[in-house]
Amino acid sequence: MNILVSKHAFLRRTAGFASLAASVVFVAGAGTAEAATATANVGVSAVVVHACKIETLAPVTFGNYDPTETAPVQVSNGQIRVKCTRSATAYPITLSAGTGSGATCTGTPVRKMTLGADSLAYNLYQGGYTTVWGCDTSNDYDYTATNSGWTSIDIYGEIPAGQDVPAGTYNDTVVATVTF
Image (cartoon, rainbow, N blue to C red; front, side, top):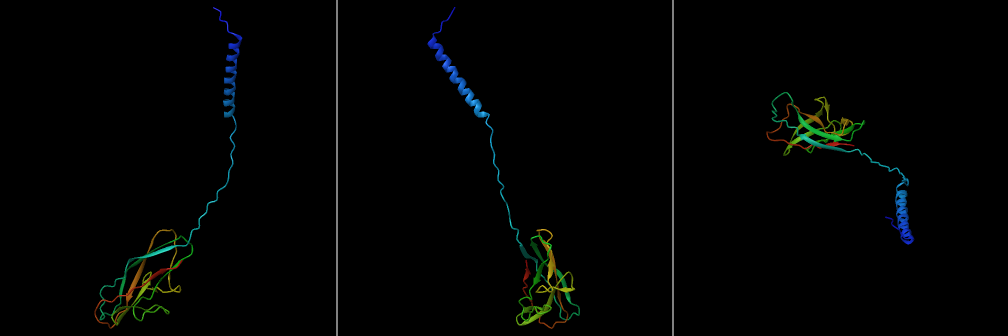
């Protein structure tokens, strides 16, 4: 069986195949193009600041004071904690003279708890009872932050013996300051 195809039909089929082949070549050619890239550097920066936080963990509580005793009353129950930016330079921590009448920071601090018009002298120390904790950088506590975590610092207190004061509850408020 011979099938005769007209010249006109043959040309139509050939044109269709040629069109299909051209589109396949076009699509294949589009996939082989190389991708181009460009880059840029993006700067990133931050400024780490000196920062500190300070808070009271425990007040200095002397308990009972007997004016007839000959020995001073000493306690080591006060505590603050401080957290500062890590630094090789020490941050000074000072304790104010307090709010008691007659308290002063001139020279060695004089601190006084009061009850009405009466006052009971005392002092606060760092690292035992040898160094009075001062109000300025001449006798402050030098804290060096080796990490950015909290550090607890003990406060020692002493009421000298033999003070002639009436019975009652004496109070004072001292401000702890860290300078950064």
